[in-house]
Length: 287
Image 1 (tube, rainbow, N blue to C red):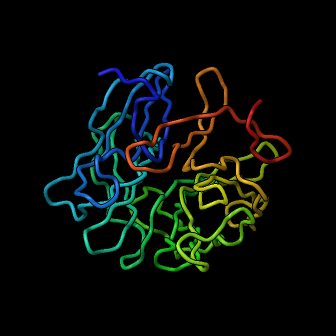
Image 2 (image 1 turned 90 degrees about the vertical axis):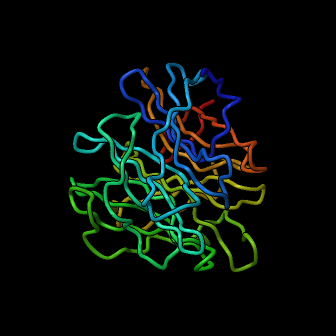
């Protein structure tokens, strides 16, 4: 079925480009919040405006441990295969991040390894980052558990089967000057990290939280690699009820940033993207 971008309901959009073809992944279950989850769909496009789909990228096996909150899949090509990272939860349990795998970008994706975030902790939105040939997962420890949401990093084995060390705190949500409290004064959200390298060798992390005008997406910068000190921009890139983005390059070389807008109400979310460039070591929206 052909669907225009403005008609496609999706949260947490992630674009994987393979040659001249774009694959759009995201949170796609009809009840994205608390209902029974089935899996993830993928949509295929040549121009980012007209999509074919949905195609089943992952469907929950009968013996799968989780049954709700299948959220925010992103797909990375790594060592010859396609790896999907996503969050899952069992009703009454905690949300954890896990890796699926496929030999093709459309899937189907199969369970690859057990969840890599700790049992008993509420975590979500993992992203893969490779530095000096070593893979790491950056993920969020949720504000609903710790109050001041955390951005954390854990080293992975080369085959992504297991963690290869202890997790490290990168920063807390309240450290960003643009972030405002969520449910109460001590609650600050961390959401949707994605790491790219700037032209000067520094790292830029996109991430989302609550801003003064609603859901928002800002950026932090580290000049010391993934383990460096993260300095936050004073204002978000997306200010008004949109966020959870990533960076991709179009076939013509144009660099773009994805996000969903609006953030609420459920069912109204749409995939958007804007051209961006790096200026003086930070991401700016193109005119």
